[in-house]
Length: 121
Image 1 (cartoon, helix red, strand yellow):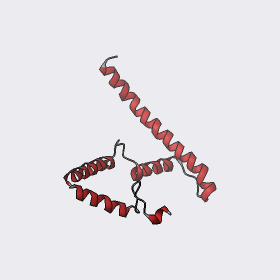
Image 2 (cartoon, rainbow, N blue to C red):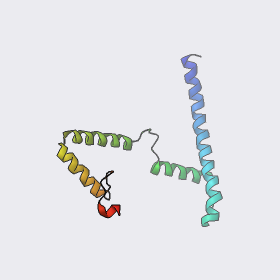
Image 3 (tube, rainbow, N blue to C red):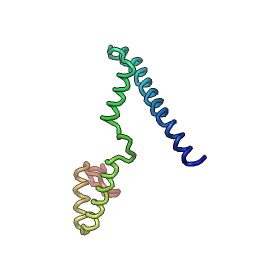
Image 4 (tube, helix red, strand yellow):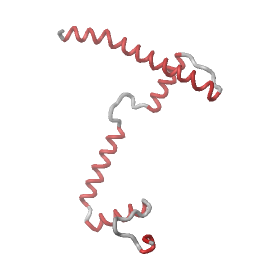
């Protein structure tokens, strides 16, 4: 099969796959909604197009818009890099001061073997 035949096959199958995906998603949401909400909350049943709109709305509000590794993961990576750079520039005294401030913020975690007499009894 040459490249042209592959592209023609994809051009024919892609729209069909998209339509099938939309239909299955809409039907799934519609059936779940119509099965659960009337008996649980007393709400009315919905049509396929209302279910499709609900699915699209949820995708817009909660979904990642089809992007793998969303901007949040990149943000975490950049924050980690910045913190590593700052950590490298700190003196040992500044590092210990930083550790102590986080121990205080996190509820007083203690290192192994640093118990006081009050906490040991």
